[in-house]
Image 1: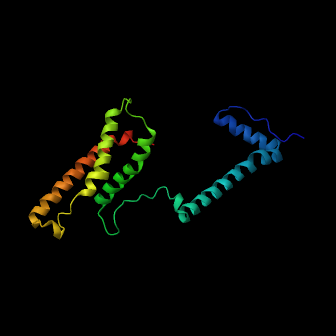
Image 2 (image 1 turned 30 degrees about the horizontal axis):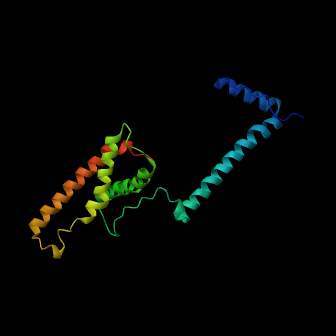
Image 3 (image 1 turned 120 degrees about the vertical axis):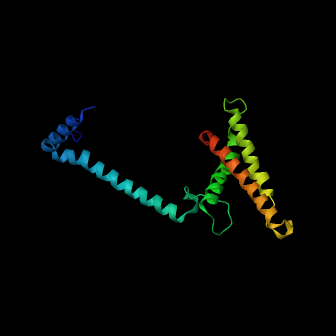
Length: 172
């Protein structure tokens, strides 16, 4: 007994509708076994797989791919601060892997790579050494501390703009 239906290799939309109607009318059991069951089974397994990954994402920290750590200590932060830290945190997460895997010295994008290394060095070495201008040990008058903070903000903005300019070239 032949179970498989004679299915055309390619057909127009109307042709497929005609084939489906003919197959259902002439061979209802075969159509059910070869077309309906696999389609419903595929939908079921797809939903089951989605549920499985939702549970893994919820309860297994290794599968929380879309949660981005900011690196900020707990507390309230405005959106601009969180956005700034998230972008640089993702960049800093990618760079060690990129340094290890990529040989960019002979690349046509060498200037982009050099810029990425400068930004990475600033984020990981220069910026963390900043002195808090409002720290009591800094002995800055409030007005001077405010000027230092404004300088930090300008530097942060400049580096953020530099990062966004090279963003299209950052891939792993």
